[in-house]
Image 1: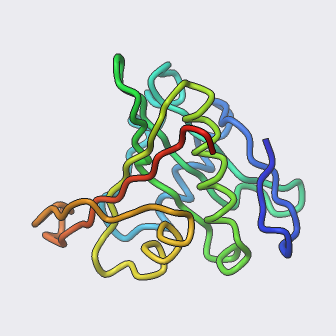
Image 2: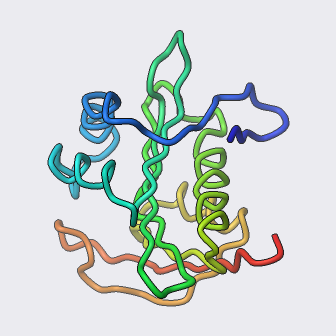
Length: 160
C-alpha cells in the first residue's frame, strides 16, 4: 500500500513490525511534546488485532512517519489515533499519504467511517483533515494532558 500526492515522491507505507518498535518510540519523542505513547503501548498495539500501526520509511532515510488506527468490535467506525511525521519529512505530503493509508486500512476492515481528534491549535493537521473531506462534529474541553481542547472530526469511507 503506497500513497502520496501526485506531485510528491512516493514514500512507501506498510504495516509496522515488531522490529520497528525502537524507531516508532523515537519518532513519537521527536514528533510530540506531550501525550506520547510509551514503548509498552506501542508493543501492545503492534500485537493487537484491533489496531493498525502503519509506517512510512525509505531505505535511505529510515522511518519518516507513522499512523495508528483503532478498530472496535461491532463498530463500523475506525478511530485515527495518531499521525506522526519526522521533522525532516514535514512539507513532503507525508501526512496525506499516511491518512490515505489509514483510510485504506479502515476500509479493508469493513469500516464505513473514520473519526479522530485534533488539538484546536494544530492548524496544519486541521487543514489536512479538512482537505481530505473530514468534517468537524464536536469539541472536547481539556482533552489533552496539558489541558488543551480538541476538535472531533469524522469522514464517511463507504463508496470512496
